[in-house]
Image (cartoon, rainbow, N blue to C red; front, side, top):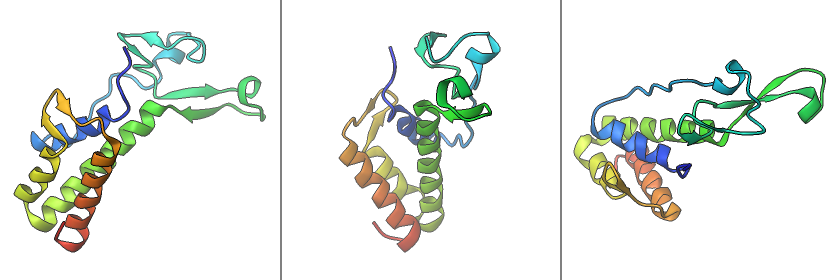
Length: 137
């Protein structure tokens, strides 16, 4: 089953809490390298689209004269998670770890329990930004 896009935000929070500031992804173009058409089916490796971060934008599919990569929603979610992690690190540098952990724990209570409410996530991001920029939430 596919995971919600905000799973990447949860991953960033877990990386921060456990002092892991690097993310490893097992493959970025698995479908193409396996001779598959990722536009037709993306069910492999136990997840919908897992292993494929870009899609081949061929002239036959999208027009134009050359093939270009098209970012997947999964890639955009990973980028959002990385931006969240950078916010956390900037806020930590400005006000210390304790204040940032309080914000992170407002959306993540365990590795498997985190808010699904976008407004709560957006508020936490805003608070992190305020901590990083102004030294206060």
